[in-house]
Image (cartoon, rainbow, N blue to C red):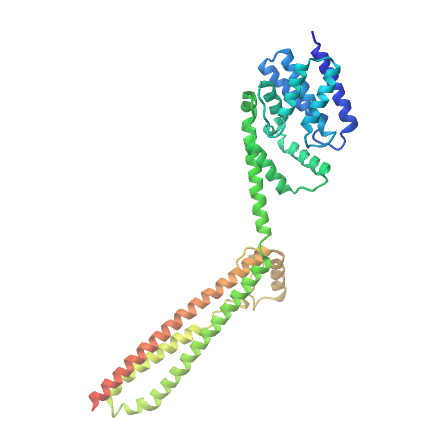
Length: 383
């Protein structure tokens, strides 16, 4: 009868010695990982009550399954691990059939895993046991560090997180034991990673906002608003000038003739009313609206005051204004919020001006037409 327990003790001592001397660069695939895989294998072996030979096969494979990392890195390490196992077990006079099954277990762990029986499934699940445990994040960091160290290549956190998410999404446990014990925690680990990934992408998206583009947008919008405001003022000035001339003519010419030509009374009144109303709306469109000129410095951070408009600070002290502006310049969100409020206020003011101007032009047009018709009728009837 083959002394499987004694051979396993020899394997354990050999593996520990091997890793101690030759695996300094591997912070994950070393003696600790091997010990955890062996522990998980024995846990499942007891659960399934494996016969001694089956238990020996899967436990031996667990000890040897990552030994190939030390001699050649991750590429095809399963094949090299199988060779190590074969060489050692042959010296211990283990049968060729058992050795072949040990090798098959090791080769089944190659990604994507491809177990064909229970012992192979046990080793595959034990190898990725950490995916469904509370220390998943810690183990993932170690693997990340190991790959960067052994490949001498930096892997960004975002890329590594994406690779790990893909692994968790595509991975499936093979044994019922692992499914029942680990699947729920694995899903939780996946959800945590997905949330981290979303937060990181949102943060990167926020950080990558085109600052210069935003500032250009504000500058162009403010310039356009100012140009539209100037146009509105010019239109109001035109109305005021024209109607002032008309009003002067009415006063100096028509009013003197009303005593003799009473039939012109109604047309004159219509014309004067339309002229006066037009001037009133034109003047309202150009009347500036100015706040009290004082502000509370504390209201700056509360976003209740816009220091980009002179009406909010012209009566305040320079020290208060300087402190408020310093707070604004140190906080980009506060600054952009103030710019947004300034553009909005300009838009509101423009809206008011153009509405009043529309009323003024409408009154002027209708009043002028009605007055002309009224004068025409009055002249005809007066004859």
